[in-house]
Amino acid sequence: MEAIIEPKVTLVGAGPGSHDLITVRGLQALQQSKAILYDALVSPELLKEVDPAIPKIYVGKRCNSHSRTQDEINRLLVETAFQYGSVARLKGGDPFVFGRASEEIDYVTSFGISVTVVPGVSSAIAVPASQGIPLTSRGVSSSFWVMTATKRDGTFSEDLEYAAKSTATLVILMGVRKLNEIAVEVSKYRGSHTPIALIQNGTMSNETCTVSTLNGIGEAAHKVDPSQPGIIVIGNVVAEHPTFFEEAVQRVVHSYL
Ligand SMILES: C[S@@+](CC[C@H](N)C(=O)[O-])C[C@H]1O[C@@H](n2cnc3c(N)ncnc32)[C@H](O)[C@@H]1O
Image (cartoon, rainbow, N blue to C red; front, side, top):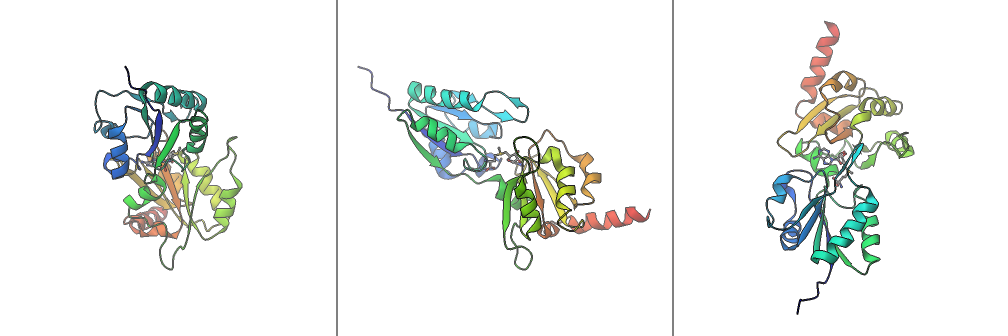
């Protein structure tokens, strides 16, 4: 007689990018699962560390190229859990940071399937850290605000204004395509010489970092590939980046040429 499969889902945070920045518990959960549904920002290297025989289903959503809707992902998660038993839902960074984890949990549990969450290292914190940019620094910034700059309709969120009016470090996800507009908007409330960094593909071998000031980032933006994931950091902590002063000197020199 065939054993009854007890379906269960584990939401696993994959970490910020590099495959070795998943937690020990997260990797164990992947290695114990019978199927994996994974997102766009998950490293292919990480998937090589699990049983090659188990199904690994890509359900990524990147700007304007959604392969599946959230409803389809929810349904697939449930179907896969009933088919294979133990399913890992692997999400970039931490599942609860702009990860739509709650929607998946609500849907899956409505079928009586148990869900466990393994937290992940969020890119919001790890990516600036990988560039040596502290989000808090004694005497410079005592708090940080993690946000997305725009609302669903593409307009700026009220939070961007509130955060810009505060003294907090701003950590902006999903804002690469609006880099210039964000810099202009924030400079309405902060000095135009406030340091800004854009870090793309953080913690990966192709990581890049562009540092400038709010009024200078427009010029630096030509180096930016808008198709790559990036995190914008705004605040005086960015001046602690090793190249900030070198870039600032270059900007001053060029302005006299
Ligand atoms: C939908 S959010 C998911 C965030 C994720 N749950 C986390 O905790 O890191 C995706 C956004 O995170 C940021 N992001 C994720 N990984 C990144 C990386 N390695 N480098 C730069 N930005 C990254 C980008 O702003 C990207 O558009």
